[in-house]
Image 1: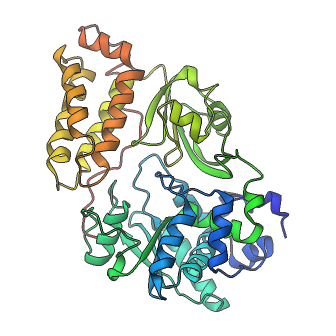
Image 2: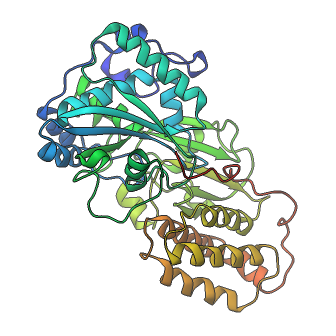
Image 3: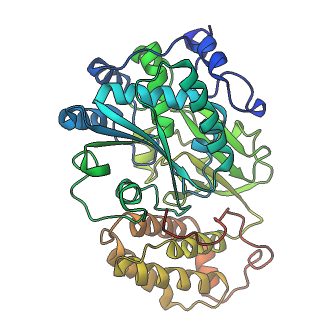
Length: 425
C-alpha cells in the first residue's frame, strides 16, 4: 500500500491509463473505513472546506444533515461542473471513481442517508461510463451498504447550484429555487440532503483513512490540504493538477510547465472569479486570507493565463455574454440586467463604446448585485468589476476611440460551452 504521505487525489496510476480498477484502488489505499459521527469531528479537525466554489466547511454541512437525518437523509455528489474552464470533477470521475464512491458511502454512513445520488452533466459520457463500470465492480464486491444511482443534468452554468440540483432531481427542471428551505433542511424528496462537491467527497475519503493531521501536513494553517486546479490559457500543458494550498500563483501555473507567452493577467476562480494583473503572479499565495485581501477567491480552482496578445475586454465581454445567456429567466436583474451589461461591454470591446458606458456599467453593478434568484448575477458582476479594474487602461483607450492593438484579430480565448442545453434533465 502507498505510504500515507503520498496518497493524494491524483496519486496512483497515470491519468492516461483510464479509470483505476477497484482492486488496484484498494491495494493502493487499503480497505474503505466505516463512517460515523466521529468522522464529522475528524473533518472539523482537518479544516477541509468545500471545493465547489463557496468554500463552506465540510464538517458543518455534514453535521447539519446528521442533526436532521433520522436515517432518511440523502447524499448527492455534485459533479455537474457547469464552469466551462473547470475539469477537476470530470477528471476524478473518469480516473479515480472509487475514491469518489468511497467518500459517498462514508458520507451516507455518517449522516444517516438511505440513498446516494451522483449528479453529473449529461455531456460527460466518458465519466458516466467510468462511473457505471466502477459501480458494477462494487456491486460484485458487495461491500457498499447504499447503492448509488446516477442522475444527469443539463449542461447549464447554474444547474449545479444546490437549489437547482434539488429542483432538477425532484422535478426534472434544473433551475434554481428561492431559499429557504435549504437542502440540509428539506432537499431531495423533501428529506435532509447533503450536497457535496465531488472533489470534497474524495478528500473526505482520504481523510477518513489517514486522519486530520495527515491532511494538515500540507497547505497552511488557515488553508490546509491540497486542491485540484484547472489551468489553461497561455500555458505549455493545460490540464488538471493537484497543488498544496498556500503556494504562489506562479508555482501553480508551473504545474502546467509554465507560461507559453508573456502574461497580461490571470483569471482566478472561474467565470465567477476575478481578473488579476500579471504582477500578482509571483507574489500572490493561494491562501484564504491573502486572497481575501486581494479581493479574489480560489473558487473552483480555475486558473486562466491571459497573454499580452489578447484583449482582456474582449475576453470579459465573451464571458459576460455567456453568463447572460445562462440565465434561467426567473428574475429581472438576471434577465435584463446581465443582458444590458453584456451588450454594453461587447460594444466597448468592439470599439463602439461611449464615455457614458463606464458610469452605466458601474451603476448596473450596484443595482444587480444581491438581487438574483441565485448567485449568477453576483458572479457576473464580480467578473465585470475585476475586468474594469485590471484592464482599466485598455478600457480608457477603447472608450477614447483609440484602436485596440489586439482586439478583433482572433476569437475569444476563454472556453465557452457550445450551444444552450435545455433546462429539462
